Every structure is written in structure tokens, then in C-alpha cells.
Amino acid sequence: MSSVARLPALRTPTAVRAAGRSRRWALLVLLAAVFMTTLDFFIVNAVAPATRRDLGAGQAAMQSVLIGYGLAYAIGLITAGRLGDLYGPRRVFTVGLALFTAASTACGLATGVEALVAARIAQGIAAALMAPQVLALMGRLFEGADRARAFAWYGATVGVAGTGGQAVGGLLLAVDPGGLGWRASFLINIPLGVLALALVRLLPADGHGRRGGRRLDPVGTLLSAAGLVALVLPLVVGRETGWPAWTWLSLALSVPLLAGFAAHQRRRIAAGRSPLLDPAVFRDHGFTRGVVSVALLFGGSAGLTFVLSLYLQEGRGMSPVTAGLVGVALNASFFAASMQTGRLTGRLGGRLAVLGGTVLAAGLLLIGWSASSVGSGGLPWGLVAGLSVTGAGMGLLMAPLTAAALSGVRARLTGMAAGVLGTAQETAGVLGIALTGLVFFHRLVPGGGATPETGAADWLPAFRTATVLLAVAALAIAVIALSAARYRARGPGPGSGPGVGAEAAAGDAVAPSAAAVAPAPVAVPVRRGPGRASRRRPFRTRRYWRPRRSLRGPRSGPLSRGRSRGYRA
Image (cartoon, rainbow, N blue to C red):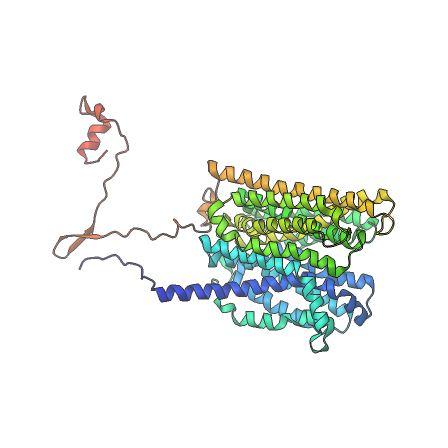
């Protein structure tokens, strides 16, 4: 019998359409989790006064409700990313989704502020378990142009949930479904979480058991958590508490804790043990640039929201409703631009981030220039235009920066990289508020504690100084994107990239490209006689090759030997 190569089965159009529908439903499951976790970060700001009155909580207790979620979320991201690498992203995502739904139920049924704080911390831990797995699973589900569109929906979901969180909370308080009051803001997650749990089987399946016998690093987990708490907590509460001595001591203590964490990871790698955070993840130039760019974007967004709210309401005496209507321009342009990133990525590639950073910087400068029109009567159309340009710049950056940061990461480090990226986002948001607020209030304080009635003129230069600082951060994103585009144009140098060194030998892989997933050529058997078949033997290239004119001369040496053996030049 002749040996015939086995060809891969062709997928019918019906099967292709079914697979596409399955991926879209899987994306909806992931986006539902992103929407819930992002919404719960902001929705509490709208229901905090009603919650405080109902539970009889003090200001310090309510502050714990607000920061407990964000702090637990930021601390758990690195560990959650590592858990996804060890046990599989779908398993960890499912556990996180179930825990988040249960914690939301506990928040809605809390009878005291202590129970509410504990449930909010559980919510933050559950959100941290899901966040890195969402990015890892999206990378598995989609490739090429489909991946760009999926990340565009991811960016739009984050933006809509983040910017609309307070509006959703206020709407639920106004409608008051079932007389639940502020509790509806948490209980609304239950039907969405249960539906997502029912469809979680559509996500890509994991392997069996723990991968390769690797274990979680408990000492590294404790060191990273302690270092992040020491860094983030004083930045969150420092300004409101007047920067007491313990905040500065905590900031100073974060340096040796994080340095000890880095040294501990190096020792584990030297001993051949699995680290919590492998430094190899930073060897990809695109990931390192992406982390810095995403941190600048999230820090600038948080800083702008903070100072804009202060300027409009306290500096210009604008009502919260009117200030919210002005902010709709930012939200609408963000969503519209996010929906175009999939198409623009195919046309512009890495230059889209350069365009987005430039547009964002121009919008921030326009906001600062037009801020003087606020309070002069009528709607401040100049400020609305500036917010629209700024939202468009943010929308053009969100998805491309996230996708570019993870595109070149090795497959075994995807969860870890997503955890690092999420930690950078959350920490940058806190740092952005702290640094922008520091510049804003430092410029404002010399005015003698300005108020809308006595010192409104002092708010304008403070606000403009803050917008200039944020515009510089946006231009830094454009510069980083430009350098990344030039680096890709030159190509990686010797020894760089994911396929070099011990990591490649260990079986690392990056996200497949179109060429990588193309079917391999099939060897066609050639009949040589009855009952005999063999593969067509390719011509071998002779090692030493010389031009035809070198054939003139004595028939000796490697050339003649090669010709006598049948090699072809």
C-alpha cells in the first residue's frame, strides 16, 4: 500500500459561523465580568451618602468601604495572574466570577458597616482573580483583526463602566427598585453574574491539573502584597488626612519591601524554582513600553477626573448634575473612538498610538485654554469641545496599548503579564490622583484657600497647570509609541525576542501570527512501482558554493567532491 499523507479536515461554512458565534458569546461573558468589576469601583461614590445614613457609619468607615475594594484589587493582581498560569485561566476566572457574585450579594445584604467593608474586600479579591484571566482568554480566542476588534470592545467597556458608574448609581437611587435603595447598586450584579457563570463553558478549556508541578510562591506573595499596601494606602488617604507621619513612614517602607520582593524572585530563579513574577516578562520591549504607556494613560485619566470635578463644582460653583452633563462629551467621544480602533489598527498599525497620544495632548491643552468660559453663562462649549477631543484620544489609546503590551509575551507568561499590567493600571490611577492633586493644590494654596465666592480667579491657573502636566504625560505616550514603531521597523537585534535562549528551549511560544498558523506543506507520495511509494527527495544545497567560472581548474577539492556526490549548487 502506498503511504498517503493525512490532510487536515476542512471546516464547512456552517462550522465556521458556529465557531464565530461561540467566540462572540465567550467575549460577552468576559466583557460582562469587566463591566461589573469596573462599575463597582465607581458606583459606590454615588451611593456613599445614602449608605452612610442608612448604616449610621462615620466618615472613616465609609472611606474604608471606598478604598477597600481598590486596594484589594491592586494587591491581588500579580498573584492572580500567576494562579492563571498555574491552574489555567478559565478555572481561575470561574472561581473569581462566582466569588464576585457571592460578595456582591453580601454587600447588598450587609446590616452593618463592618460586614460591608469585609464584603467589599472580598469583591476586590474576586475582581483581581478575574482581570488577568480576561486578557489571557481574549488572546486565546481571537487573532489578527478579530483580536483588535475584541480589544476595542474591551476598551469601550472599561470606559463606559468607569465614566458611567456614578450615573448608574444615581439612577438606581432615583428609581429605587423594590425599595432597595443603595443596596440595588450591589444586587444588580447577581443576575449578570449568574448568567455569565452559565455561559462560562464557552471559554477556551484549560489543561488538566497544575502545570508542570510548579507551585505558588507564598513568600513572594506576602512581600508583594506588603509592598503594594505600603505604597498605595498612604497615597489614597494621605491628602484627606493631612499627610500624617505614618504615611511618609509607609512610603519609605515600601522601597525595601519591593526591593526584597525582587531579590527573592531572583533567588528563586537561580535555585531553579518557579517565581511569582518572572523578570523574563520584561525582556520583551513591547511589554515594557506598553506597561509604561498604560500607566501614563490611566494615571492621566484619573488625574483629569479628579481636578475637573473640583474645578467645576468647587471652583466654579457648578451643580453636580450640570457637571455630569458636561462630562457626557468625554464619555461619548471615548466610546465612539474605541469602536474605530479595530479598523484603524489595520491601517495605521503602531502609529495609531502616536496619533492617539497627540490627540489626547491637544484635547487636554484645549480644556485648559477654554476653562475660563465656565461660569460665564450658558453651556461652556469650548470645554465641551476639549473634553470631546480628550475622550477621542483616550479611546484611540486604550485598546491598542493593552493589545500591543501583551502581543509579544510568551504563552507561559501571559497571566503573569496581565497581572503586572493590571497592577500598573491601578497603581497609576492612585499615583495620578496624588500627583495631579499635589500640583493643583500647591498652585491653589498661595491664593489663600480660594472658594467659588472669594477666590474663583485662583482656581483657573491651578487647573491650567494641572492640564499642562497631564498633556506632558500624553505626549510621553506618543513619544514611547514612536520609539516602539521605529524599533519594530529596525527589527530586533541578535539575541532578542521570545525565541532566543533558555526560554525558547523550555518551550515558550508567543501569540501566533497569520504565518504561524498557516498549514504546513504536505509531502505528496510518488509512485515508484507496484506496492512501493516514497517521498520526493529534495535537492540538497552544497555547503561550499563558488561561481561557475571557478569550475575552470583542476577537478579536485570540495567542489569536485561535491559534484561527484551529486550535490547541486
